[in-house]
Image 1 (spheres, protein in one colour):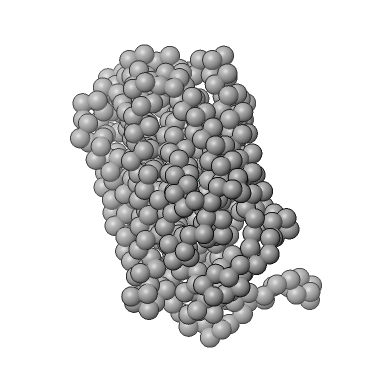
Image 2 (cartoon, protein in one colour):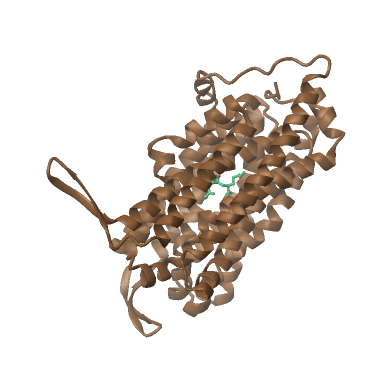
Length: 476
Ligand SMILES: NCCCC[C@H](NC(=O)[C@@H](N)CC(=O)O)C(=O)O
C-alpha cells in the first residue's frame, strides 16, 4: 500500500504541489484572523470603550476551549478517525462560525449591556456583553484554527511523505507566517481608513470563505486520489485509529522529548513577541512609532528560511541537530538581550533576525520529525497532543512574564510620547527566555540520543525514506 501510494503520487508532482497550495492557502486565511485584532487594541479602547482587561480577556479566549475542554485533543482524534477532508471542513466551519460571532459582537449595538455571573447569589464577575460574545467567538475560532493546523500537517504528510516532506511542511508553516504578516500590517490601516474596527474582520471573513472553497477543491482531489489508490491491486484496508492508540503514543519517549522541546521553544518565542515592542522602546530607545516594526521582521525571515531549512533536512538529514542549533540560538539571542550595556538599535535588529532563524530552524525539523516517531494513523492525535501542551505554554508564559515584570523589574519611570510610563528592566524576563532555550537544548540532546538508540532516522534525509524505509513508522 505504502509503495503504491508513493508511486502514484510520485507520478503527479503537479497535483501534489497544487494540493499543498490549496491546503496552505486555507491555513493562511485562518492565521490572518488569529492575529487580525492584535494591532487594533488601542482602536477598540478608543471606539468601543474597551479597557486593557477587556482586551486581555478577549485575547485569552483563543485557548479556552482548546486547553480546558480538551477540544484540541478531540480535534486530533476526529482527524485520525474521520480523515483530513472531514476534519478540514469542520475546522473551517468552526473558524467561520466563531468569526461571525466575533464580527457580530464587535459591530452590533449592544447598548453597553453587561453580563454578570453569580453562584448562589454571590456575584462572581461582570463583563461587557460585547466583550463576552467577542471572546466566545474567538474561542470557537481558536478550536478551528488549531485544528486546521494539525489537519494541514497530516494532509501534507499524506501527500508528500518521502518526497520533499520537510520542504512542503516548511512551505505550509511559511503560509501561516504570511497570514500573520498580512494581519500585522494590513489590519490597522484598514480599520483606520474605514473608521470601523470590524472592517478587517469582514475582509477576513470573505478571505476565509475563499479558504473554504480552496479546501473543498483539495477535498475533490484528495478523494479522487484515494479512490484511484483503492482500485489498485494489492491495496489493503488502512488500519483504523483506536482510542487505545493514545496510550501507545504516550509510551513513546521520543514523542515526549519533542513535545517538551516544542512547548519550551514556542514559549520562548511567541510570548516574547507580546513584550518585544516595549523592550525595543525601553531598552533600545527605539521611537514608539517604529518599535513594532523590529519584532515584525520575524515572520518575514521565516517565510523564506523555514522552507529552506526544510529542504536541507529533506536532502541532508540532521533533523535533531537542526532543532539543537535552533535551541542554542535562543540562548545566545536572549542572553545578549539580557545584557544591560547592549542598547544599540542595530543590535536589536540583528537579534530579532537571529531569533527568526531559530524560529525557522526548529519548526522546519520538528513537524516532519514527528512522522518518523509516530505511525501515520496516529499522527492527528499526536500533533494535537503536542499542540495542546504547547498551548498551555503560550497561554501562561506571557502571564508569568507579566507577573515577573510587575513584581521584580520596575526601575522607575520614563516619558514615552509625552506620557509618564513605568520603566521596566527586562534583564530577568530575557534570562527566563534564555532558560527556556537552555532547557530546549537539553531536550534536543535527549531526542538525539533516543534517536540513536531507537533508529527513528531523525538524522537521515527525509527523501531517503522513499526507497529506504529504515524507520519504524509507515503509512499503513
Ligand atoms: N500546519 C501548521 C504547522 C504548525 C505551525 C505552528 N503553529 C502552531 O504550533 C500553533 N499551535 C501555535 C500558533 O499558531 O500560535 C507555527 O509554527 O506557527
